[in-house]
Image (cartoon, rainbow, N blue to C red; front, side):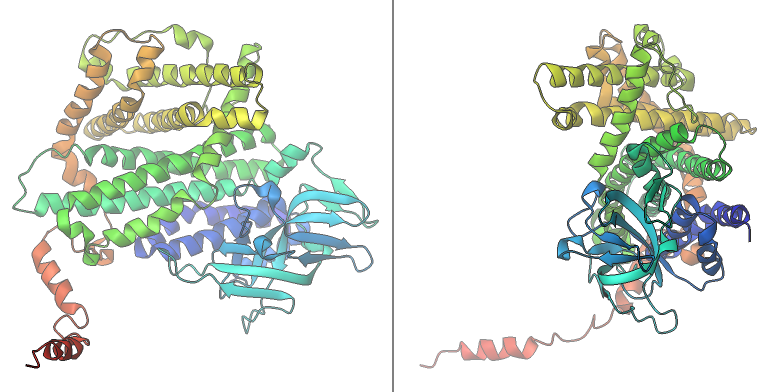
Length: 594
């Protein structure tokens, strides 16, 4: 079977992944994560890093003969992938790799599907050729269980991770190898291979680019997490806004706390979908060898590395706001909000530490700025930084009315100035740290992270989302729908601008109080204007009623009837406590003996 045809089938399957993932996330977040690992990351890793000799693994996955897991993280090594210790030592005589876990710190962990039922894993390990050297992190397809009995093969120890604060059903596991052997052909050899003479053959000359390519599949996971964050935030807002709408004792008013998060849902939803389809396009081009894949891959990595942290943090804050908006009911299990928060929190940590990912995006942007200073034009496929020009910093605030200020085109110009200013400011500070303070590159970047790189990455990805949403809104033919979407986009922009107001004065983009007042007043104005459309906007993102488990999420309300029904269905709600007799005995023992 032709490898390219097999890959095309894999990509066509992934093309429906968004709808499947949204449904499985609605039906059960645990199922959504498992589906993402099995049908996306496992297959995509083989498709992007494998060659013709790995067709059989994709064919077996397609017919359900295998269940996949993705094993990169170790007990003591997560985001710092260079420190991964699992070894794949090449045996020249037997043409096999011997997998070894040198200590407990190197045990593979947190891998979804691994604990009980995965039959194969994508394993990242240090490739070692005795007498030759260590050739860095590589991916391997490793069979770990008998497909009929689901018992681990000899030489492999697997255990379930145990109870967690959320996502209890995704079967996280821990795994260690004791001289476990796999065939030479199981190395995913698109970036490098070992020939018949036992010599390492590098397919990509630059070691840094090789490592980036090997870990490129992680972009899939980060985009998937971004989509999951949209789903989580959507559900929490549906619960809270429908509660506030259907609660007769709460006066109807504009919800200034939650309306901006509703705008976040719409903007991030469109942005994440677009990012997902661009990733599919990139994978197709990679298989055909078309385009500047190195530049496209780096841009995709930078954008996905910022989208996952930014939207996971925003969703976390929005879910908390939704819980608080529901008053005391928000803390009851029947509302599902506590479960939603527990399930979402993992998005802020897995697939890379958020702060480390943010720094990678900032590093990419700083390299592009350095190229611009040298007069070179950075390559850009997503149009994420195509607007960058030092002349942008010459522009000034000139809006004379709040309507002019909230125009989407004007807000895009404001954001472009902000990204350019933060780039220049961050670059200049890093150069001072490297030269004046005589810090090494690592410490200079670390010192530059909190107040510079982080703000830069946030502003960059917010601007990307605004650009993407604006492009899609222009394709809408219905004028009323287009107007509502434009208001949501404007609200998203001005609400986010509030945290950067000081930078516009610091960079002399604005003078006087008008700019700051416009940011605040336009946020309030847009919330009021969108109030009449709130119910319709919520209905669009809500679950089908048959899937709605929360007592707060039903469109017809009946909150207290549903609350009463839920309370009466809990086990033992009317029973006597099993410690009641102990209390009675204790009280009788306190009586006076006189």
